[in-house]
Amino acid sequence: MEPRRIAVIGGGAAGFFSAIAAADTDPNARISIFESTVHPLTKVRISGGGRCNVTHACFEPRELVKRYPRGSRELIGPLNRFGPRDTVAWFQARGVELKTEKDGRMFPTTDDSGTIVDCLQGAVREAAIAVRLRTPVRELVRYASGEFTLTLGDGSSENFDRVIIATGGTKVAGGFTLAESVGHKIEPLAPSLFTFLIGDERLRGLEGLAVASAVASVPGTKLSETGPVLVTHWGLSGPAILRLSAWGARELANHDYRFAVRIGWTGDDNVDRVRAALQDGRSELAKKQIHNANPVGLPGRLWERLVASAGIAKTTIWTSLPKQSMTALAQAVAATEFEVRGKSTNKEEFVTCGGVRLKEIDFKTMESRLCPGLHFAGEVMDIDGITGGFNFQSAWTTGILSGRAAATPSP
Image (cartoon, rainbow, N blue to C red):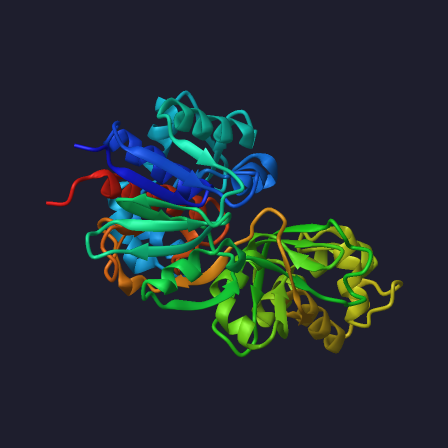
């Protein structure tokens, strides 16, 4: 019998993982990875500031899926079969140790994404998987016999028994066009993890300032997230902002990324409670000037800016603060509003919501329900997670399931 021929379209995390899983399942299979660029695993290399946030230390699937704005229901089964604990064991078996940080994110102990890249490339070499760089796939055809023909960028064509599309979530990668050509519907695409562009004098000069736990919300919606917020040269970023953008990806896109964002700087966006906290600290700071006597633990530069935005003069002391000014200060601390006038892709996270419609995929095998023998892995599907290692975990999970299924003979 001729060896099974498996094509993996896309040389990212999901593509490499599915190819390795296919080789582990059927060592005799002839497997080729087709990557349109000259740089495979680019996202792995640059993610997490060059450290690679491999996964997250949330080991209960039903809790884990709460981190996926899209695809949470469909991922429950797959994550039970291959979840974060399995990911840790997979890399550990190949000599890569992971560590867990306070927020649950897991990185290689080397703090170097090159460790993960080297591991994946080494596994591919060991399995004799062909990596075809600068080789885009332009056309996908399936015949009644079950065989596939791929037409490559140079006009040549090759035949395969199984195909895995793992091209990621960008339009330019070509995976959506291939999926549509065999009947799949593509859910509308929109950036999922992005920072907010804000041109506001109240933030000018605060670049680089971080607040450990703030509430970020979008008035008029149910969108609200708590976590670190970072002031940048272009506006606001940090985990709370990125999570807000993930859950609101389509809603914010519908507003053309022009909306208001409200920040509760102390982690509480209730004005009455924040006013009470300011009142409690007032007695201890009675004779001190408000602009440099901060009872709620905010960074000094931010506190000064909030005091000024409440219209309180620098020379004002706590005992002489009028009730109306106290209310204005509480409002500034608990519910500062900024006008967002656009988005900027976070340099470490570029994730897209949208993709191949999930009801058209069998999540036991990641196989197309419309085109037998075609499988999907990673962000080409309408799956995306918040920041923290969840998108890579989805890539590992769907990659290994698609690779195993593609290499397993049909019953």
